[in-house]
Image (cartoon, rainbow over all chains, first blue to last red; front, top):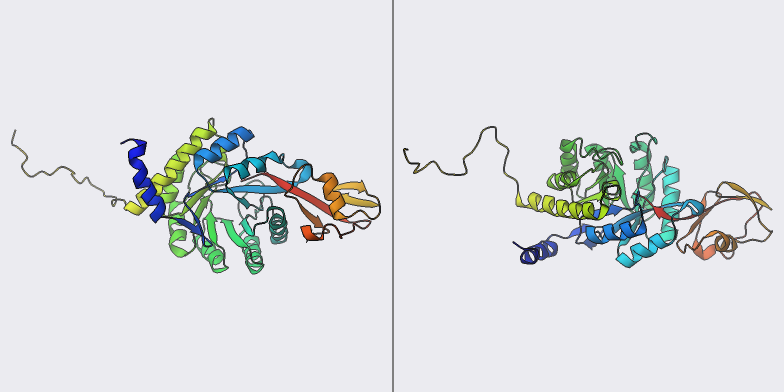
Length: 270
Length: 66
């Protein structure tokens, strides 16, 4: 079947299966981070090819920030910006960073990230939940980057987070989803969208996240540090779409023994 | 007067406002945020917020990030 013959089916899926966070509707279930991008040309190609509608950015001292042209590229692509609190180690730092980001970007959406140390970049659960509560109370739409702990995921959802974003494995590790069972449990335990964030290495990891029931995938390094970022962006887009369709279609149960797909009835005696 | 801007000791003339500092330091960015002694200074308050000796300021701008 050609791409054009597939188009009506894909359009129907987009229309009937929207991705909604905090009453905002997206057709793409792939969120892209800009970290590690080698050039603005590559960034633009990857963003456009990925079909993403939500792109994360960070805030740093002006001397260390990228040129203003990165924002021009993202504006030109028509994507929504999602500021993060990357690098924050305490709730106090994360809350202040989110408030600064709200001033800079004019959005109350924030990817909340509070890490425990720079070696693992793993979330600090105690500081994270504290920051989430403070930011929700301050009117933020909080998308919380968290561990794959289903109980913590539920606590974040109960605190009013608009989305819970468990890691598959440490940021930038490319180790994929180390505990698929936890991701599935976390998905079952909350009513808000679940976005697999961090650890994706290649397309099959993104597809698995969607098959496990995640509503979307957020990745950066897997695309920006790939040998061919634009091609990997397309791979991720198709993996996310494929994984989502497989989830909705309902996979067959796993069996210990074979089950013939061709009937034995009428088998000739040869 | 002596202040700290983005971790560096800096001399500013008395009466400098946050808006003046941003104009001098923003490097072409229009999406900038400023913290003064650990609190956000809303953009609407930049023109009337005068910097005092000993203040610690952070002038931040967007950058790439996951």
